[in-house]
Structure formats: structure tokens, C-alpha cells
Amino acid sequence: MPVPVVELKTHYTGYFIDPLRGFFSRHRAAEHEATSKSIVRPAFSMYGKMRIADSALVDIVRLTVADIWEIKTISNIVVKVDGERTRSITINVDAVLFYGVVIREVMRLTQHRIKQRVEEMTAMNVAAVNIFVRRLFPR
Image (cartoon, rainbow, N blue to C red):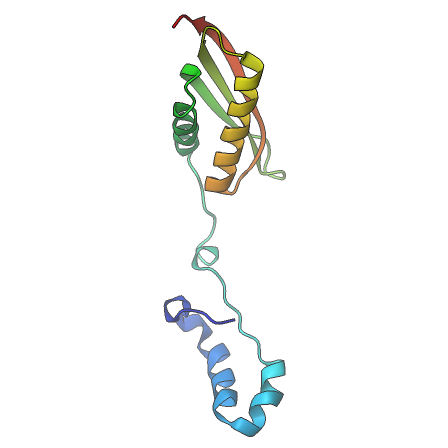
């Protein structure tokens, strides 16, 4: 697999020299090409676990809901980790909607957008997005 030079660390020096030797010698190149393999590991996997703060998830939810004009305000955003084994999260949100909107459609759209945005930005599995409509606000 071709890799940019920046990705190659000193940990992998022995892995890459031998395939280069096979590349420059023509008669052994075809024989060596079938057996040579390179191991490339992303840098973050060498340094341990990556953690995402709950406040970052709350900010993602706030930014996502800010685009939806039917929702006046949101508050009391709670992010719960469902377990160490499942590694999924549940998001609870209290919302105030404008009077006259179709609540079921707005909530379904909002749940879908929050789930999609959190999953694509954090690569975490979102088990549920619970939105509680607390009030209706006149326009």
C-alpha cells in the first residue's frame, strides 16, 4: 500500500527496506512482490485511547439543532454512555418548539440529524436520541 513519507515512522524501518531491494533488482521483483507486505498503523493507535468530552458532544448537538428553524431553544442536554461493552451513547434533549409546527415530523427530523452528525463527527454509535418537548412558544 503506498504511503506518504510523513506516515513512515522509525518503528517500521525493517519492514520497508527489504521490499525496496526487491524493487531495484529486476529478476527477483516479481518473485518478491507476491510475498512482501507492509504494515502501516495510524499514529493514534500507538498512543492509547482517544476520548471525546461530553461537552464536545453537547456542542455538536447545539450546532445541529441551531439549523432547524422550528425549534426555538434547547436545554438540558444529557449524554449517557450505555456501557463499556457496547460503546454506544444515548442523548437526551429538552426542546421548546414554535406553536403551529407538526411536532412528530420535526422531532423525527431532529433525531435523525443529531444521530447522523454525532456519528459522522465522532465515529461513536448513537443508540438513541430522546427529545422531550417541554413547551410551545407563540410566534
